[in-house]
Length: 306
Image (tube, rainbow, N blue to C red):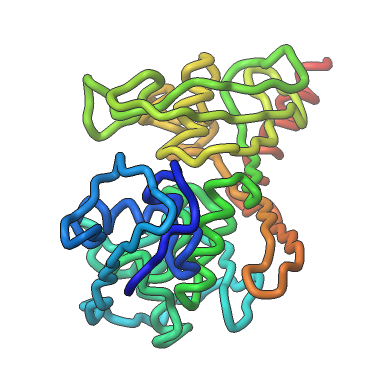
């Protein structure tokens, strides 16, 4: 594919994502790293800044056949059309195949439900997946059915016009009614399986939160992500000494209130439809496990009054 630069001084990944609608910025970065973008027959680097009239030769590799099996796994579909699908994912369901989880994932379920109509941009292990949530986080997740929708939604993630709102219960009492945590997140130097504030190669991360209710020893929060770093909510709240209830990785090392995995639910999703331009606002109810914890806390709170 031949692309003629129409601007000077623009980063290569930004230029490609802007001029090639089916490419997200992260996809453009990957192609640059793989030497798939040439200028005068030579690969350009990620640091390249465009010059007006530069002729770039771009090679987009063909999507390889998926070595994944479609599996008939029940899905709670919140929204679906020809471009995308939004799922209310249950706690415990892995999003995509990985070591230790070769099948039985959301991707396997989507392959059965959607057939061949999933975007290939996510790669052969993550077809259609625009963003992820952890195995033990429940709630809304969006997948794209074609590359056009995938690239458009990825751009919304980058420019923060796609909003993800969560509810969680954290340990300890938070005094202020609302706040924000602005602290970079990177790989933990002590444990490469974990993330940490100011970790290795840390990237900017911002989280906003609002108190919904207070209970003895715990706080119910509404949380909104501005960025989407791995484990961001869990890491940020733990860094403020208010780890997510049940989070045995970043929080207390023993189960509390019967929870041995994080009490974290992706409750709302707001985005612009990639084809129609319509504002889409979706929500899903709190799952049973979350409501059961709230009921326990209500009883504790009531008993504390006497």
